[in-house]
Image 1 (cartoon, rainbow, N blue to C red):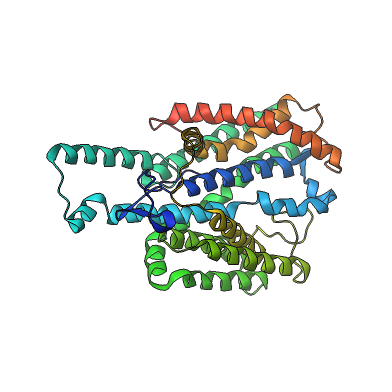
Image 2 (cartoon, helix red, strand yellow):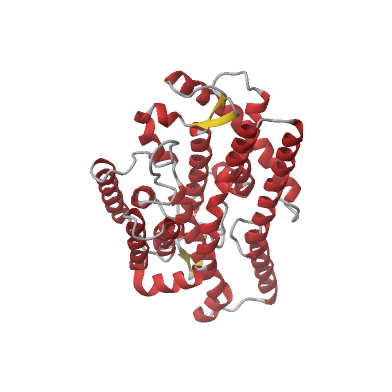
Length: 400
């Protein structure tokens, strides 16, 4: 989801984090955020099956009938990358605020002509306005996200209310409501960590990634049943958030990323083979436990390994082609409507093309998988249209 990353610039220093003492935008994190968004959207579209039962429409996961596909969820479950990008952006935002250009110029003894000062101030105000428009980019961004949630819930509330009046089966209404609101659980821990970013940035600056150790202990306690599971809903995502803050501060080398991949991968493998954890990184109906509700050690290890892949492949200072930068920027701009409305697009396709294979039917074979994959381009076009409309109608502050 879109986040402020500092001043758009390609003059990254070591670690791609600063240029002349000023925080700069990390294009690699922008790309990572787009990848994470794609993983969430495609993952939801692939594991959300629908079957018609005596009480109407109900959910059915293809992973229940085809557990061999469970490892695919390790690629598509990208929430750890979201929280990593969130921590990175929170740290960069605070770095820009506390060590702005004027302070750096005073430290370096640089003096600007009045015209240059006015131009520079205009640029800073323009950047600040752009950051307010993003998800998590200050109170303006959070307010926009909140209005978007209200618009989503309110709109579907009207639809479900009309369904009750029209006599739509209760099972169908429950299924639709669950599919619409289930992605919103993410906002709770995300906003909590945004609110705690000031403390976390200071603590990471003093103690490094050891700040995440108590959170790991809490997750272990919830996995063992010693701590209420709800506590891990936030604690499980502290680890990638702290890693994002640390990388924003210049920590994290390519070899460090390799070791994170190895360590996270080994822990993940041991947990699902010896520790008795589910193989799937997402919840599967009928399973006794889930690695996401609440986040388990599997989710933590998976997030560490995914972040390690990013660090191992990262090339600070490399900006790529202009068209690619524009594409990434545009996708980040519509991150809020994409995240909020992607399941609604799937429900819309089910309503319009309910008789077609791959949308409604028992997801118990590879034929269903191929059919659902064939629908992905159609769903993608629909989501692009919805997200574009939502962004254009809200770019001046209306409901998103």
